[in-house]
Image 1 (cartoon, rainbow, N blue to C red):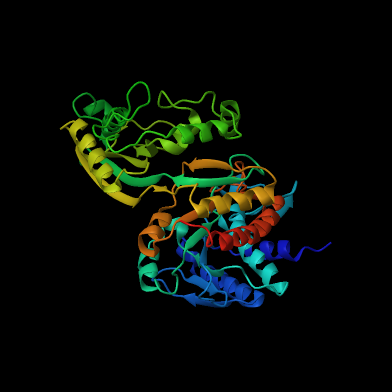
Image 2 (image 1 turned 90 degrees about the vertical axis):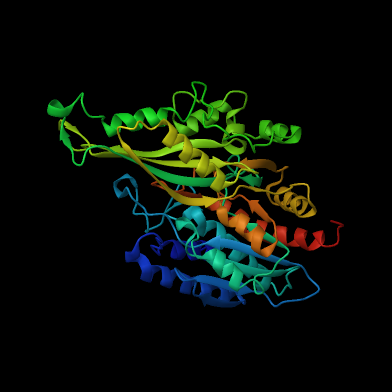
Amino acid sequence: MTDPHLNDLLEFLRFPSVSTQSVHASDMVACATWIREKFLKIGLEAKICETGGHPAVIAHTVHDPAKRTVLIYGHYDVQPPEPLEEWKSPPFEPEIRDGRIFARGATDNKGQILAHILGMGEILARGETPPVNVTFLVEGEEETGSEHLEAFLESHRAELACDVIVISDTGMAAHAHPTLTYALRGIAALECVLTGPSQDLHSGVFGGAVTNPATALARLVATLHDADGRVAIPGFYDAVQPLADWERQAADALPITEEQLRQLTGVPALAGEPGYSSIERIGARPTVEVNGLGGGYQGEGTKTVLPREAFAKLTMRLVPQQDPATILQLVGDHLKAHCPDTVRIQITGGHCGEAYFMDPNHPDGLAARRALKEVFGCEPSLMREGGSIPIVTTFKNILGADSLLLALASPDCCAHSPNENFPIENFHTGIRLHQAVLRELGKAQELPL
């Protein structure tokens, strides 16, 4: 039997809407146009908006001033598909295997945001009046840091005014298990470059008299953590608050074991900061991570050189109360203090975003939990997500609204990796969840805050 909703998703996934690659600029516009047409087709007012970068799409139900307003946020841009040779099927030719759709963007975020759009379409197709006002905002720059969205929110503040925000761009604690993410880690990024000689040198002629930047960088990176895995940067933990008892209990109750996590990652053994479970380390503790190292000859065989320079790319995942600018300063000062004076150091800051926290026992949090339980048939887990969605804090700062992070992504969805996939079951569940959460948020307006 033909599934029109599934056909919509397959069509959506065929757009190679890779925001970071300029060659796909026209694909981005085409994809935004498709979304607008989908909104119009289901009966919403919709328009494409210029942002200074890739376009965004805004859509509205008919506004009723007596009702609360819910903003549904998602993004249509996707990560680059490379390495292409590791895909079992072409990344922009969606293929269904074993009950899952395989394509770039299937989970992140096309499958999840389309479930919300089609959930609204079903409400209107039944001739029902939504229990709340609904505004959709679907942007095209999330995968590149939402560079233009803050200014866009400022300029469209009145149009996007809302009481609460719903986002499905996070992961479930386990496959098909309802999960409310109530906290996200923040992020601060930098690149460190060590430069030694004015050009690559012969390692036999100059080795032993000139500091090798690659060796110096390795020693420098090693100072970032102590032998137990704690960050060794002075002041790094100063603003970190201890976990509440209920949070540790919620983390312990998540339906994933240490062994399952080890198997999911493929590592021989898990490791990390002492005194915390792996789940707590991922969601509730800050980290310093080396995302890339480079320097010297990378080709086949041997080339006996002392490289002119070496670099490291770092990101710090942050928890609530940690200020990204302060952390960047602390890390930069640490690197400079430990860098030998026989090489030059250059530090360049990258993108930043604050951590996010919302009270899952707030009436809106309870409404989301009721909706999750209704749709999935069991009590939802409460989880701190280790990843970052910087725009969530921007929403809070500009629109004054909290975000409910309702996961539809399975842990093994391979987001950002080859063979990204989205279970068809999750897609249809998301359509029902959209309708359930609107009903429950409509009821929440009658409860005291």
